[in-house]
Length: 455
Image (tube, rainbow, N blue to C red):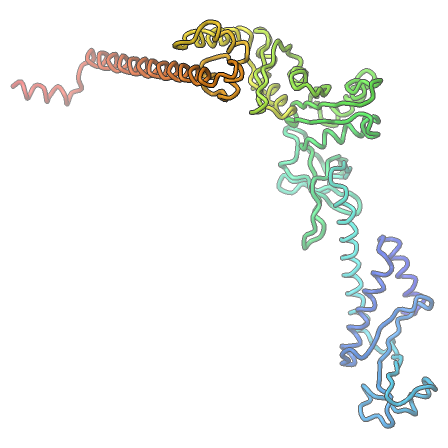
């Protein structure tokens, strides 16, 4: 291989594979260095360099200039040295250029193998560097094969895997040659090369699809606050904007639903609820539970939970099929949601108020004050912070302690009554069981025993 051909190959490989020429030249120099060591048995007294102008690999062996050379591998006579460099002097080192064409077929093959391996390593690193920065982006690939339920996609320069666990349930997958879009969720470097993992079930896949369909999202005018999905079935996404002239929900829906329909089609019919974000958690939850209407929201900020009251006829709508609607709403807002119908809520309010009225030594006025302050039952009074209770009762800590003692006494009495009722119920069941057994004829072996005793 002449120097011009070597130079052309380096430039072509660099251009076609996208590998920096410096990496290829370094691999080539390393290959030649290995071949030199193998042929001449040299240690470190030589240097390999690629001449970019001529395209030639140059090898220089360094020798000490002496009067008379005793070891031709490490020394050169002064007369010979001055033929190469007239200014040579005894004691100096002189680089003697070797003939690289003399390395033979084995050296050339070794160089070729090292270059091929370095090309593969460099290409692998480039692919990894590209995809590690694309986590969270959507990519499009062609189905190459299906391996134990996992789909392998050809992304062009790389392969990626869509695991069975990241595929949408009941979605029809896919014959070889079909095009598929998915979200990059991981990219790591393993011994076999870059491992790129994709997902179609991740909530961020839905967010990325909306960003691709809605220019206001990609431009940052409309922001996605939260996403909750049950892939293949239903999803909720909340959006907001700082621009008062823009309706964030309308921007995501698009003219006649064109934008949201593009996302729904990609997800093969997954239903999507688009909800306006609200800093007021009560209004936010009411929107998240749509299409059900909400009458009242009772918020417990300390435990990040809330009690939501809906009309009786809309309870099943608010909960959804198998609890799906309230479950997605809870994930969307990040709070625990307990949904009750209006009748049950009013009944619990009445029962809670009655428990306050029945507290020993507590007047109706005090019970009204407790109820209006949010203490809806004797149990809530018992669980209340005594300092907060004292503040409600006019900074009277003794009064607060008295109220909690009364609540404790009431709850203990209630527990005893419940235990007695349960014991009575169990005893009644036991008597009924024995009575039913007495009406039945005894088994044959028992009859024999009885007859024996009587005889």
